[in-house]
Length: 406
Image (tube, rainbow, N blue to C red; front, side, top):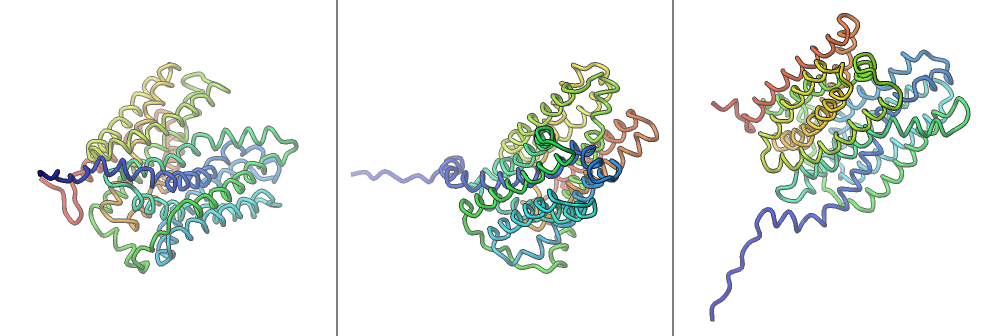
């Protein structure tokens, strides 16, 4: 009697079979990412209200966004190193709880100085949660599905970026009095608590990564592939936010869009950003190098076309959508690549690089706007993105411990 030989499952089958076990913790982690991400741009829609209520200029209130980004950039590698000896789940839960508590304090802040101080705490927790969260997702992902899993996690941030400011404005408008800006901060505090509970119940225990000193953790940047990847992230995101920070003036002055039309464009950009995460994740699991290069090249083309055709409202809206789709496709693809090259320590530096890019891009864009107007913003953003394309091509030609392949 012949015996049927048992076949081992293919990687695709294995990934499919493991998917149900990873979806629940992955969605819980993504909920935390959404709660964390809501804080980044919620302030943008509340600048006038905070300014009036606390008696400070709008320019000073705008520093709440910058300070948050700086705190994220510092918090990701530094707090990531400080907590590496602890299991992942308690660190994730604690970061969400402290983040929520800081937002509760912000909601009751009697003075601008208190509000400013809370942004240091929330930014540091933001960086810590992302640094540990990306590593946790990479470890929980099914074989052959790491980039897709990272895309789901990153999707929480992207969705928050798209909806955070509009939802904050709606909550503020729905309340009475000059202190209506406090309600969005309180809502983020509640959402963070719910996310902490979800992570506690749904995410399995994650053994601590190897305990590393701060010096050992920073040593990962001495590896050429990791340093190149982190630099590519910072430069690409600087190019993206050089343009995105000043997208509203472009749409108003060049395309003639106002009011709800502008809000609609921003929501479209956010929705396509979420879609870009999914596209980048799937593409990176199948063809990582091609996906990375294609995302940056498409983003560069989108920027050039956007600033060249912005006088046409229809063309501007269409190109903004394509540009954001490409830009956010880059995120899960590059995170998966950097994790492959340097593990969780490297990912913490890529999180820092994204936020450093936001600060750098907004600064460069502001200088360009003051000196040469919107044309200078477009040129600066395109040059930065072009440089990122060169770095990305080099990145996909590198392997851990190698120089460029010839």
